[in-house]
Structure formats: structure tokens, C-alpha cells
Length: 368
Image (cartoon, rainbow, N blue to C red; front, top):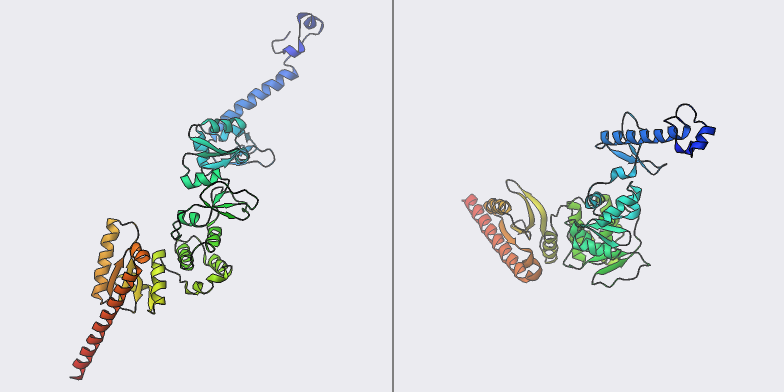
């Protein structure tokens, strides 16, 4: 019997005597040899193209390598798996469903390895999360919801009022979980983001939860941070509830913080003429200038040494131009507004009196 013949053609010595093996390799051996060579070739191509971009083939459900020498070669699904399950989840935004992992080329064995990783937690059946998830994100995932409303705005640095509760969105047919969070029920749009709704959707919901002045501050803040476009802003205003139609006419583009917006709205309702983000040559832009004589600057909640020094230089330049400066903390705006208002009244009156006396003196000098 030939050395290249296989056992399938020679089950016993008697059979070999009566049925001698054909010369050369048999068809079954050729098939096995072809598979072995194909596997070796796959390993070589996998090593050569490990750093190249790969994309999923829609016809085979496997990943096709972007190898310029052989674009028809198909990589096995396990080629996408890394040594750490947490690293796999980080690529998917720290949260992934089983069907999403399979759709991106990971095998069942690779998914099982992810589930066994100590840094990975199964928040729900078929839903994995890595240790990088923040507490509010984990709470949303465990509830089968997405972050919504002010919770999303706060994560993006947009003004979100003073409500610190967790706001979550659930589909209409979902039962309310036992939690102290605020739940909003509306259809969840199909999105690759599993943790939160879009900023536009969050603003749409926030317009029904926040106070009118907070809504104006949120919209101005979102535009300044470039989280929404002007076209999206117009669409939000057109779809706003009726209770907000009057206050939305006071919206201005350019305010850099929600506290600044609150100060402007309150001073205008007190009868003052307020210019927001007025440019002063040699100084820059001032938050709110009242009656062209008093600049009301609002400090942020955090202070850095560089900002502190720069603001004092700005204050010196503004005072030199005969514009009084009042710098206030957000706590004074929301908890001691009466004191702030009385101070602005006194500063405006003094500045206008000094300007009137200076004008009278200059007129007298010209008359002489």
C-alpha cells in the first residue's frame, strides 16, 4: 500500500491485498492536505495583515482582510478577538450585546472568554459591560434604559439646571424598575449608542422638565459648545411646548455659561438694558454689561490659577475704561439674588452719577 494512501481506503490487510491502493495520493488525502495548506496560508496572511483595516463580509458573515495582494482571502472570526475581554468591550463603547459582538466577527468562544474576564460584568442577559462604565451609565444599563434629559446634558457639559436625579428613557411597554430615578417613556430610536440618547433628543425632553430660564440657558449652552447646529436649534424652538414660546424670544447666541444667561434674563426683567458678550477693545468680551457702565462677570464653579490671573488683568483694563466690574459666584446668583440685585443697583447709580458730573464738568470747561 502506498505511503500516501489513507485508512479510509485500507480498513484491513486483507482488504489491501484484494484492493491495492492507487498509485500516488488518494482524493481523500489530497482534500486533507489542501485543508492543512489553507490553514497555514491563513495564519501567514493573518500575521501579515494584523495591523491593517478589516471589514465584515455581508455574504459569509466573516471578516475580509484588506490585503492588497489577496483581497479575496477570508479571515476567521476569532482574528478580531484580543487577549483581554475588557479591551474588546472598550472598542464597543464599554457596553455591548451578544448579537453585536457576533455581528462584528467574534466567535462564541471569544464571547465566552469576555464573559469570564474579571473586569467584565454581565449587567443583563446578553449584555456585557467593562469596568470603565460610570455609575449612572451602569444604572441605565441595569434598568434596560438609556440616559436621557438632564443626565445627558450634564455629561456633555451643557447647562442642566439643578436637578441631580438620574433621568432615564424607557420604551413605552417597559415596566418601571424599582429605582429612585426619573423615567421618561418614549420609543427608543435605533442607534449604535446603547448608553444614552442623542443631545437633540435630550434637549427635547429637557424642555418639558426644566424651568423656562433653564431651558434658555441649556439651548444657549448647547449652541456655544457646538453640540447642536443652528438648524437643530430652530427645529427645537418650533417644537417647544407652548409655555416656553414667550421666554424663547429672549434667547441669544453667544452666552458661554448657563449662569451668565440667568443673570442676563433677571437683570433685563428688572428693567436694565443688558448687552451680552459685549466686546471691549483691549479687554475682550464681557459677560453682561449693564447700562454701558457696569460689567457683571460670572465665575465658574472651578477656578484655576491661570484663569484667576487673566480675569484680574481684564478687571483692571475694564475699570481703567471707567466701566465698573462686579464679579459674582454662581451660588450668589441662585441663593442670594436679592443681594446681587441691590449691589448692581448701587453700582449703576454711582457710575451714572459720576458720568453725569464728568459730563457737566467738561461742558463747563468748554463754555469758559
